Image 1 (cartoon, rainbow, N blue to C red):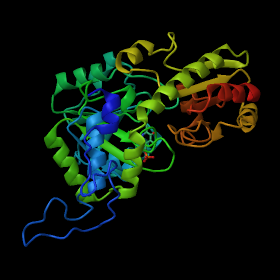
Image 2 (image 1 turned 60 degrees about the horizontal axis):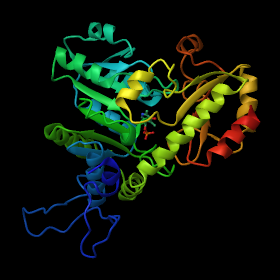
Image 3 (image 1 turned 60 degrees about the vertical axis):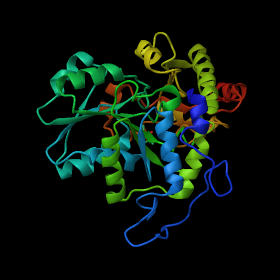
Image 4 (image 1 turned 90 degrees about the vertical axis):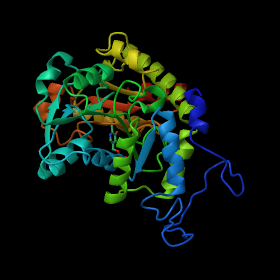
Length: 380
Ligand SMILES: *Cc1c(COP(=O)(O)O)cnc(C)c1O
């Protein structure tokens, strides 16, 4: 099946006894046993729940994986992936990683004895030098927040596996979604999602997932899911499953709108710089073209009067773009990395990365693009 069909039917079946088209929300914590010693398929909903199973099968299908494991949040999914390792193990992580993952790694997991190196994964030539005898995982993110950098996933996999095939490569695929990018097909071992974003798509749920192609790795992660217990509710699983059925339609519109808005911004006399991987002169355009089916809906830009005060006024004047964290919902959002996602990064470090006071991040929604452009034009 093609991916659009998988998004609707992948891993799904008509649900007995009424042949329900959509998986019901199984709000049951426990299940009656046939007899002593025979638990049946479901025993207790921390371990397994039919609505969660339906979601996990859908996720495995749309990522071309063999198993998927759902969690109560994206960050719980990252945490579970890192629990595959043990004290003393070393992880190479991308330098401009999602802030919540950085906090988890440096403020919780380092205390438990995991060691991290944060490196620029765009520098493939230098990557080999960061591996140590105890390196067990490489944690990749592409595209990144907020400068939409793209790293070459299959090249990173190749370098990693040439050092030791047992070193796991995990990819945070949240910004691309399975519609645009399939890390398992590019050789990664784990594709991670904050399903809170594009997969759910309607800004009404927090949920995370890991998708794998190795069945044994999947079993280990199901064990961690049950043992550590960060499971999503059946209601939240239902909402994400429902969201996935329109993922391809939403992504097509997200990408079309973003391409037009990026062009509009670049041509605007008050705009200094636009970060959008669909531009031929974007620093990673060729890699984006190679590993993604389109360029996504995240755009960042800087105005010519890039001070904090004028940025504040611009954002205040926007009527459709709502100021808020998160991304990937049907509604357009505007964010300000310096005061929001990157507030805890020291100013010099931030500016060296290109995250200046005037940087504005857009999550382009699926509204009429004319209205979105008029909104930006008015504010500018
Ligand atoms: C939001 C996000 C997460 C964390 O997911 P939650 O569902 O908020 O826990 C991880 N990675 C990326 C890239 C994100 O955008």
